[in-house]
Amino acid sequence: MRLRGKVAIVTGSGSGIGLATAELFACEGARLVIADVDPQLGKCVEVGILERGGDALFVLTDVAREEDVKRMAAATASRYGKVDILVNSAGIAVAGNALQISEEVWEHCMAVNLKGVWLCSKHVIPLMGTEGGGIINIASTHPFRAQSNYFPYAVAKGGLLALSSSLAVDFGPRHIRVNSVCPGFIDTPMNHELLSKLKESPERYEEFLAAHPLRCLGEAEDVAHACVFLASDESRFVTGATLIVDGGRTVYGHFFGDMIPS
Ligand SMILES: NC(=O)c1ccc[n+]([C@@H]2O[C@H](COP(=O)([O-])OP(=O)(O)OC[C@H]3O[C@@H](n4cnc5c(N)ncnc54)[C@H](O)[C@@H]3O)[C@@H](O)[C@H]2O)c1
Image (cartoon, rainbow, N blue to C red; front, side):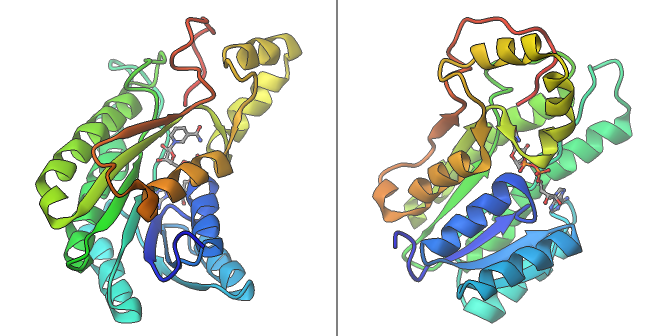
């Protein structure tokens, strides 16, 4: 077991990438805090891990609200006494170009996708002991390869990469490693509507697959495996890094229309 004895908080672990990561971490021996804004999803993940013999605590958390994050950190400290790993996966997809979105939409996108990561880091880092810890931020490939009409999302995820670098530099001397994982298009509930629209046209779907050198879409588990590496001691000399998990789409010169976010 690669994470035996470690305490991990995974935000957004009610669904998708966060869920797969929490479940894989539990299989690897970690004790989990499931921090999600959706009470049904979060409770269900907690129960599932407990039923399989793991250790998990669900804490209802809106990462965009500092009071919630403080409460989540306090609940973690009281249950486990420390934190080794924080995975910031809570996020929302926000569409629209710079002229279309309102100030409210911009602020909501930044609050969940960017400020939430800062708040969680701010209140969780003090719970990491002298041996340090690891923070893994789930960013995106948007900062490297812009998709049209995903302006606020791309800006937030670009900011998240800068946030990760900054934390890596400031907290490296305390043995806290901070890395980003940038998933490409992953088949999760976030993308289900888009994917079913895409599949309505078999030619267009095939064309989309062909935009990936590996000729397939990613699963949440593909991202979760990258997170296990970054959370484990195997990556003890890795910090400030950005790991792209996208089937090769970012480095491929293939053009695919203008409507697929990742
Ligand atoms: N699916 C993809 O293709 C893809 C690609 C690149 C990056 N990402 C990023 O990966 C992360 C996870 O995405 P996903 O595909 O698993 O999405 P998802 O919608 O399946 O899961 C997101 C989870 O975050 C939770 N959440 C949303 N707002 C929250 C808040 N304010 N506080 C706490 N929890 C909140 C939701 O309840 C849900 O459980 C996101 O940060 C997303 O931007 C996803």
